Amino acid sequence: MNTTNTHTIAPKKSNPYLTLFFSCFLAVSFWSCSAVKTKAYFIPTLHSLHKTNQNYSYDSLRALVARLNPDIIAVEIRPEDMGEDSSYLKQNYPFEMRMMRYWFPNAALKGFDWLGSDIEGKLIPANYWKEISAIKQWEKAKNADSVYSKRSAACSPLSNERTQLLQRLSLQELLSSKDAELTRQFYQCLSEALKGSIHERVLNFYDQRNEKILVNLKQILRENKGKRIVILTGDDHYILLQDKLRHSSLF
Image (cartoon, rainbow, N blue to C red; front, side, top):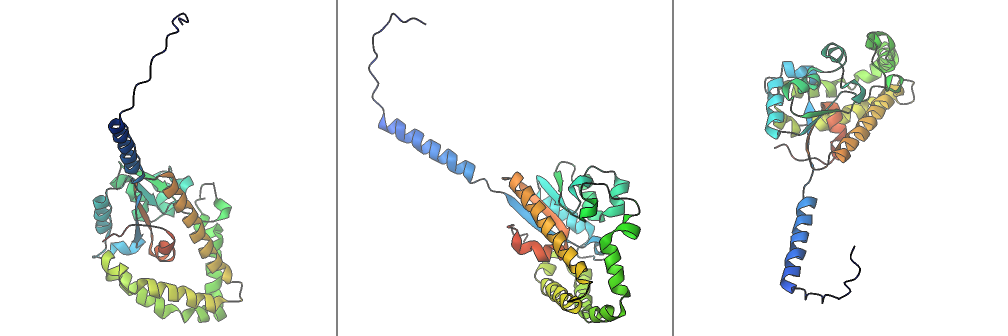
């Protein structure tokens, strides 16, 4: 560096108009960046009932997701199972969830389900649902208990009425129907029927699963800000979680 030249250069006068221009440019740029918001669409699915509901079929669901053109599709599959093959996924998850990676190969898929602490972080054994699963064993014990089975039967009319809606309504019709009300009434009825018994563990598991799903979904939303995200979950979960997640209207 040449240190012999010690003359000073007079500072240039600032141009107030130029300063104003750059200030506005920076302000506009900052606003534009902060205005990029996440668009999340929460969609209830029907699992096997899509086969028979002509107004909300698998094709209807696929067309809706295509119209939303998501960057990310969050599916009801455990995160640790997302990379497994089609045979494994078929044994453990609904058709519409496992088909998303084939229907929309350009979208990134994220799993959010939780099926129990005993298999957390592990693969699901081939005989799990019939022989090992705690929740399946608890449900069988409840159904085999003549006292509490009879008490639970009082809730069946609510479940039956709801099933009739799921079998025939379009998604748009379903969202404005009694489906949510009937679902909440059913679980409230079941809670009262099982209160004080060992069978409350069934409902406790359902609650725990919903809480785990909610935590996982919030993490997906946090990690993908500014993206278009479609969240697919069974109708039961949707109804119990919809008020806990910010999402955009479908229609």
